[in-house]
Length: 306
Image (cartoon, rainbow, N blue to C red; front, side):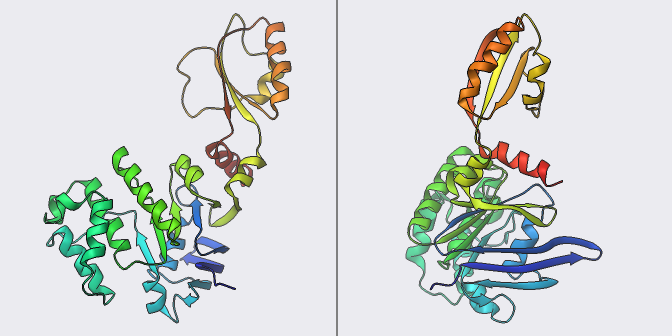
């Protein structure tokens, strides 16, 4: 039986009186593409910092590839590569020198072939001899990804890796990360782009206020709230009161007056809903039916966890 890539058991983290993590337990199996989601302040970064050895848990136990992150920290850190949220870099080195220095931290010499492959896959070859401080924010983030991969860790944690980067880099990064996952690397992703998590992650944990509120396969989470969103633009009469409980509140004001978004639990309910609108004198000017996505599941779970 193989050991989990990451094993978190009853982890508590307190900062003074504030409890950032409240007994979090989860296990990420080797070879998984795992999503760790939650709103700002949910505890994601605190958990990643403990896994990476950047901070210590107040209570609980964490292992990376079977190595305790405190008692066997050298082996645990060697097995892990982390891409942080913040743009952290040394302004005195070129991109290649930065990666060579990172290799040296792990005692790896003659790593040029792998460094060249990373540079090519992250479209950094043309920047290899440029100083880090001369790079744009998106290019610096590419270098952070390269640094996390330079020692070929079996477990890779990506903490908001595509925040503030362009579409081209995002696509190149995900193509490369998918390849790493196919080659057996375990990937743990935190992101606010929930469409990325839905497309990439086979299993997802959702955190809120330091506690796990959902932990399941992505498809199972989507099926938990099976149904669809019906977007309508109505004229002639307002939405009838009987349908008001089905209304989904949107984050911003609708682009057109009379625009409504309704939730339907089964496609078979659609015919009766349209009949109710006709009887109320509503004219349907536009209609679009969308499947439930991870964003809607996330919002619903966060509401239920209050």
